[in-house]
Amino acid sequence: MVRGDRHVDVFEEHRGVLLGAAYRVLGTVQDSEDAVQETWLRWTGVDLNEVRDPRSYLLKAVTRVALNIARTQHRRREEYPGPWLPEPVSTDAESEPGHIAEVADEVSLALLVVLESLTDLERAAFVLREAFGLPYSEVADALGRSEASVRQLAGRARGAVQARAPRQSADPDTHREVTRLFLAAAEGSVPLEEVVPVLAPDVVLTTDAGGRAKAALKPITGTAKVLRFIAGVLAKPENASLRWQTCEVNGIPAFLARGKHGIDSVSWLEVEDGVVTGIQVIRNPDKLGALRLP
Image 1 (tube, rainbow, N blue to C red):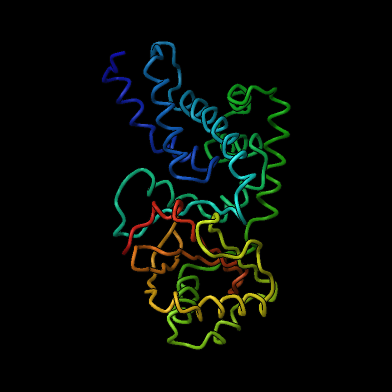
Image 2: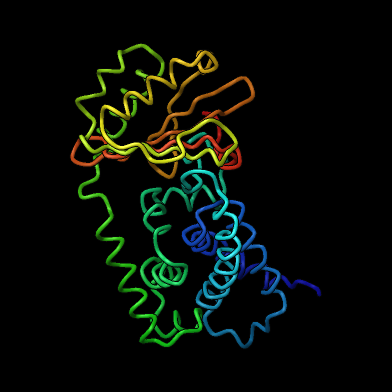
């Protein structure tokens, strides 16, 4: 089928929005891009004269595709070794421009973690209603549910997000300062004990390696256990040659570990009321592809 200029123009106008919806539903870059590409292929066969609101039409279409992909994700995750974290995207000034960087700058990793705890339909309802403001009737049409059912889905999702969202996120300067302190401890330029005052007593460290690298298979909770784990990792001979540097992912400070074959890991902190409540580490190489070395 010939893809007319009008199809291309309308789709490209909304590509960033579609990628944003898919990324919120799926939490992975490649799956989100696949959802947008599948939506494009379907879009080429649409009679534009029958489309009253292209943005709404395309948002509903990409969400249906994303939900189909999410079902496949579930089957993969049933066999996924250890915790699963969303895929981060570089958003520093040096990052390659493009829709995914623009999307990631607006979508926090903390939100993606919370959304992952919802059911597929709750997540989709929240994204379409809360993130993109579609009327409940449009969301119901997208999900193939009644409007009353969609209101319940969105309400449950909204409540879960509000309950699990950071109580008071740190200001950007504090977040960067704490991140630099952790980077210095990883490099060995300051003792690891210096990070103790900024750790919440119930801090949780989560590592996602997907069975592709060494990592903890369960979240580690508590200052003493977290520090012991970090000290053990840093003391391993194979990690002595790692080079560390700060970066930005999804609009927040983070730090990369670089090995001889490229990026070894990326880590970021959840900071509330000036203390670190969560440490997230990704070592799965499949989830490091959207990162760029500063």
